[in-house]
Length: 221
Ligand SMILES: [Zn+2]
Image (tube, rainbow, N blue to C red; front, side, top):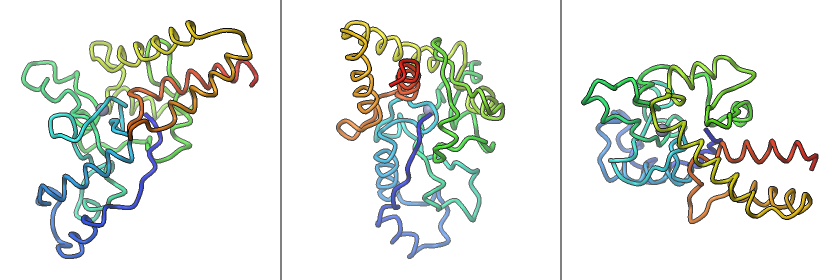
């Protein structure tokens, strides 16, 4: 999970709500929803708000999620909307629904962790096997393991995070010259994975940033 900084809602959405304030979220016309989805994707660097997998501007990979369960008061609040992956929802068709994740698994449940809260995100750590966890907040671990199912041993998220980390470790190993170069290199890498490239963040960049920050601390940069 990475920090999401919300921007202003798209003007088309604001104007639409002004004209139709009583409308329910599901009744918003598809062209306005399309604008909304694009705006959310842009502020999230085209990554799922919960699992950091790549999502794109189409229905097959992306859903608009209400962070706090939807009700008549908050369903049109832009600050409550996130773009998320489909959470392995196809697994409903067999008996492996337990491998669902993100919003598909979460449903109406409330999360303790908020991707819009930078302090929450700073409490996240990762193991080299790809596990996402928090050393300091047990409630966040419940969010990761029980509500969002981000550490499913038989799912693809944990292994994908592990592979992303291994690729980075290999790259660092190949590019390494001496310790000084390595510190500068890591600072550059930290910048690279913190930023957008062609409007996109690197998939699973949270685990990469955590690894780089840990290395930099060890070497007393
Ligand atoms: Zn996801």
